[in-house]
Image: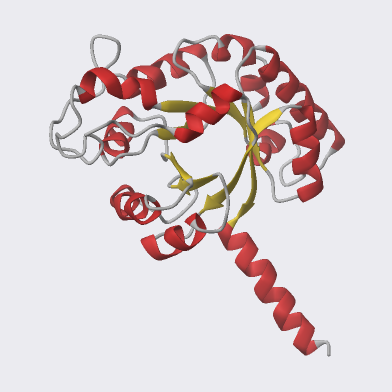
Length: 255
């Protein structure tokens, strides 16, 4: 059996724009519904969502038949969490709150088998098609995509050195944490925050690594794409549901 090709990683290498959505509602039903909505990638979030590690397996299985790339965000840059998610078959991870080269190197080591890393070896995992993928431990790294979040003012000063770490496939900006770290909590549209994001995107792009971001503002998403993002998440499932539900209720109450 062949090792599945990571379409998301290949698209980033090709420089193609990937439009994404955040999946914060746990469970396979919502994950499967979102998988068929036409997005290029969907993030299963376990950092700021009730979704826990065991939930991810069923969500990956639910999304698998659809032409969408499943990306998983672990709750932390933790080799145990990373190992479990990779064994479930996640091929692309986005790790939050990376602040230094040392943390970036630790993340890379966690997704690679020895001697190049420290990922624990297990033979009968979903990732290896339960042992049916020949030489999985030798070949897995080629199809694993590692994205690191640079989401503080400090992390932005280290973009070039973090991007230079071998094994880092892309850098992702977290606007909410960045705004808070800059002294503007909740003010994602503050001019200083916007300027920092634009500068960060341009600098990430200049390193040769693709830049990504999450924003629920369509105009800002398009601005970020103009500045150079190549994987752009444009909404959150829970936010979309609440927006539509509130608008529906207001439309009837105000009729």
